[in-house]
Length: 142
Image 1 (cartoon, rainbow, N blue to C red):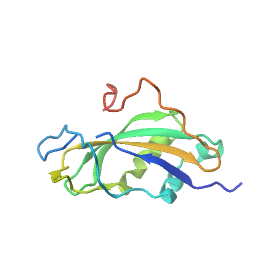
Image 2 (image 1 turned 135 degrees about the horizontal axis):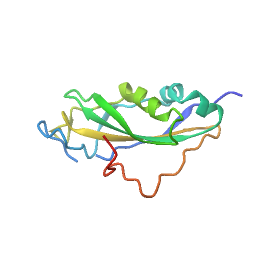
Image 3 (image 1 turned 120 degrees about the horizontal axis):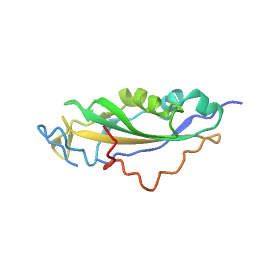
Image 4 (image 1 turned 180 degrees about the horizontal axis):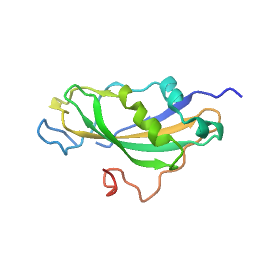
């Protein structure tokens, strides 16, 4: 069986305006210079999850550097757990880059939450989002 490329269904960010000195601020509407391609996500898709046609969802919280790169990322939610989607999300970080400013406001020191839906064209579908999960207010998030 030839596996179809993974599809990035959503790379959205739940993010509030950042200032250069407000380290805890979230970027409300990130503007991306670069995102991971479908081919990149396909390469990162966990092999066992692909084999068993298991899709997933991940949410990462990252800090934004002065040049728009992400650092200090942590997975705040992975569905299903222990299937490799969290590790895959963390490996995808180097493919993201924000513009250094959003609406003229520097993003340096801000944080961004990045949800990724992992599924393939050959049947690995992502599970639903738990109704009680809100990544912006999740108390267990780092």
